[in-house]
Image 1: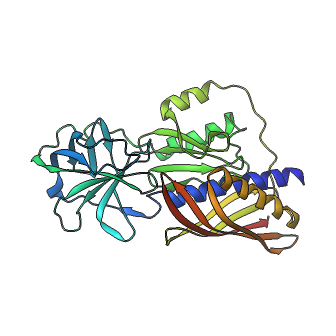
Image 2 (image 1 turned 60 degrees about the vertical axis):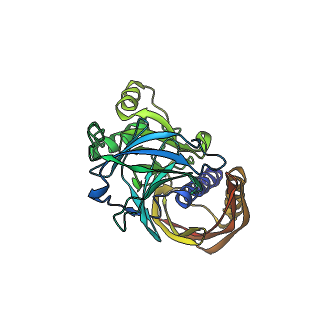
Image 3 (image 1 turned 90 degrees about the vertical axis):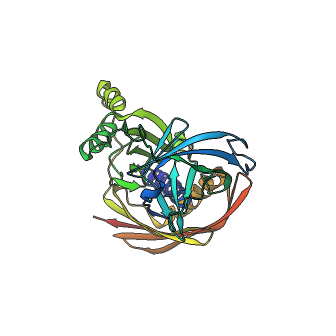
Length: 336
């Protein structure tokens, strides 16, 4: 039973990380935004209203280009895939994947350009760019965007990683390929997940890699390095149960449905393993700086199925701002 307990603990940690990511992702509460054609052009803008923690100082001047296809270019960055958040249709949000910073263009509802607001990865306001359009030119912005990876390339990344680096990405217990905003990713029983974005950059997160996505390099480079690995690494023993994760998560009063997330070939846990799950989740949230009340409840248990529920109600403080968060997640293991 020890392998089952270890896998269950790792799965709980991985799912806690996944839920945290969902809670604070600007994409999780988002819909694709359309930038009005009247916004297309080049702007001279000046930064103001800088808040503590802002990476930009007041008075900084920058040229911004808004181009067709939902593209923004500034300070050497090319941002794509703008979204609108639930309850706010006035702003189109562009997120820089490396830093998590978001630039929000308004007002796309009225079609009148107002300003561009800068916010942190947690949504905290950091400052504002104000200015005006100086031309309708968008030359060079978006012209050299990388081609998004194909589905075959994405599948190849996961296949190669699972075959060559099974100690990190074991195929046993792996989720199906999921999407979150610009990312395609798989969640593994080791508490680690592997992701690739639309620019073709590969990331890892969770476990020994921490709770922030770490860029590993371009897809072509990663596949080339994986191809050089010749040592066969034993994979963890497969189990005979399927885990389905469902529920809701929320931050600052906004609830989002999670799942169903299906992870196949896991060892079947027992009712006595619930305490290990509670300890794993408490440890994960303590390490993430999240405080609150965690309740792990055994819903049902039989020879063919075990169901338990995790409820959380607490707070997370980041960059001086406190966010309330809740979640109610059900884990259903079914024997094949």
